[in-house]
Length: 177
Image (cartoon, rainbow, N blue to C red; front, side, top):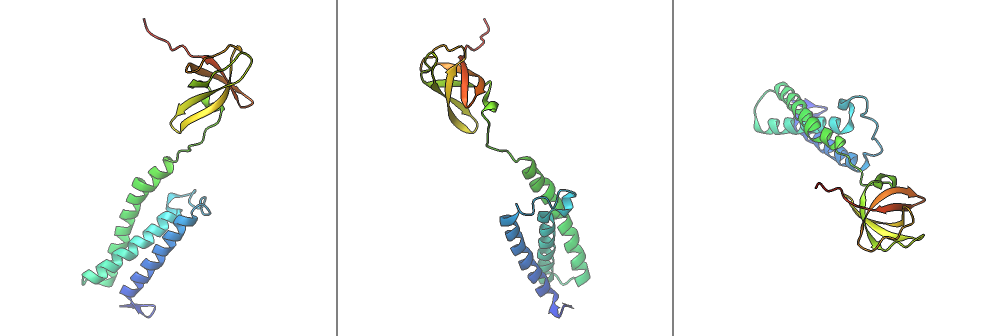
């Protein structure tokens, strides 16, 4: 069978190569087309490109391996592509979208955290503390909550943040007796 003056096997291969290249380009430039698939998950360019690629790949392989009718191969390719596309969407793309986690933090988000003094905090002065988070170790300028001195190595609780300075109080963990 011929389509557009080419054998159907060559059509499948050409579509597969073009869709594969378009997918690679989409990977690099997906931020530009970010809002396109917001209305329906099946209008997402990643889903559409995957569908076209799956259809062409299945069709190409079945044309080479089997002696089935060309119409049957097209139907099997479309059904297989739909199944693979649904699996790709629900088991790969959807979890990736919901797993987007930012590694950024704000100073205010560190309020209530426990840190450790690495530069002693003098009366009416500034020292330095470190806070261990999932993002790593963060060091910040600190002052005493009631202008009390806090020695090196003491654990402190971040009470508030004023103009980039962490206001801290010596931390006394609650212990059951």
